[in-house]
Amino acid sequence: MLLRDLRREGLFPPHSRGVFLSGAPYRLHLLHRYELKPISSASELKVGDRSIDFMLAADGFCDASFAFAERVLRIGGITAVRLSSDPNYSLHLPPNYRMVYIRRFGSTFVAIKKTAHSATNGYISGTGRRLLAVPEAKKEALKGLEDVVLEPPPDRRELQKLYKSTRFLPDLIDTSLSEYPRRVFVDVGESEMGETEKWFEEHYPARNFKFEIIRLDFAGRGKKTRAAGLQGISEWMGGNVNEEDYVVMKVEAEVAEEMLRGKAIKLVDELFLECKHQWQKERMSSTGRAYWECLALYGKLRDEGVAVHQWWG
Image 1 (cartoon, rainbow, N blue to C red):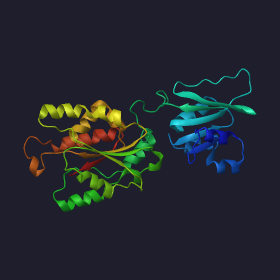
Image 2: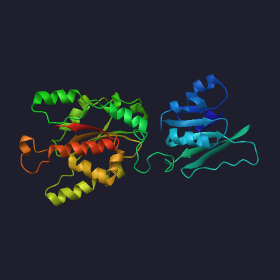
Image 3: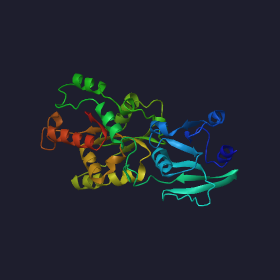
Image 4: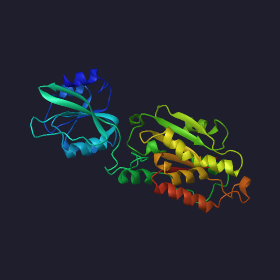
């Protein structure tokens, strides 16, 4: 009756990813009907971070239950809780939760909604990430990336070999792209319109999920205009993508540096770095960077937990 009522109220939509938290056996046929996965305390660690839309806690709530809910619930996720009959019991909600439902079905049940991620739960807050925020997951994913190329490819044949050796992030992690409410590819730079987007659509392992394609050009004309445009990238990122999104970007070195300064880099899951250097035939003048500077920037991005690849144009 409770689950049916929650569904009618729109708090537990069909096909939500849900779990049932209880230390005792329950009606498995009912859980199966509502696509709720039973979870014991011993199996809590198997539930992915910020991957759940709905949780039913039949045994009431304690600090440990809230810690689990905070870890696994997405923003907007719902936890339904049976309140204790103890008159001395009171439910204290953290500031990032609010009560949205209360009913009595023998016992009193409430539903609380997660409105934001906690800033004190050990995750990166504000512009933090959830995919690579756990050190172990980050290390394992980054270890699977292709090796950095210490010298630029001498010809197109070697260039093609390098592109074929790219190890994309979806191939290195257990998290499914379906767990993200939005998937975005942002192309920032001066490449010809549609060129990078076409490459992305043909080569990136999107797993049949649609990516929103966004094209930005902060270059402008002249150094002052370009500098002002670059400074706006972090602000643009903060206003147009959030930590719940799966974000892939292709950027030039100056853009990556500005995102590092503005902390917007923490919103990025995977990044293709284009670094124009002095070894390129068209960049033999002082306008190009020393190649070691490109490698140093690559290392900084890796240190930030970004799955970064070298982009050769």
